[in-house]
Length: 187
Image 1: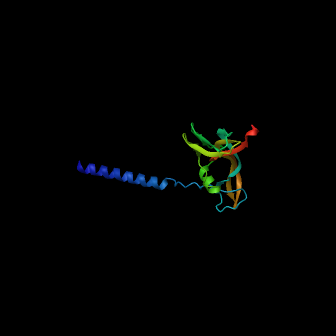
Image 2: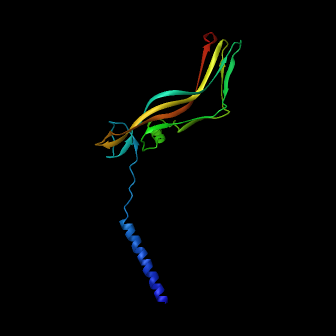
Image 3: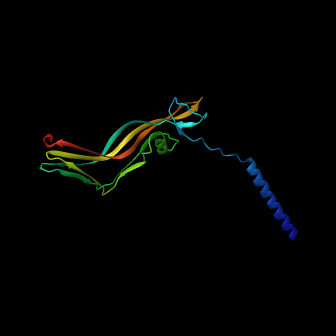
């Protein structure tokens, strides 16, 4: 009885070992996908078949979230301030197909100053900005958004070529405040 148990145990162990070796021998090796890198159509590239993406800023727009103003009819300067009573968040928006971490693409290709969102916090105070006598000070706050476009690339014969699948979108570059003064007579 003891020999039968030993034989059964050895047979099971040997079967598992053979199955494990065959599985190891026959299992396909997973190859790492090529990393997508930034580039521009017509520029040189080094690795044939490598994928890339182009990125270009196409414009900027100030998206106003709030306004405050002070008209100064006194003889002394007046402060213009605004305490935010409502939080505002701006996230980016993308249309099209993207294979690469766009935030990383912005950091590599353009600047490390980009973030996926920008936020104005409740209770944050903007200013003071001094308004001269006889003037109205206007404070506008919001987000400076940048529009962008790009396309997928492929390295062919040492040159980046357009592989199709364009994309576009907007990204909040920064929280932005614009202050300007106008004569009270302009009212």
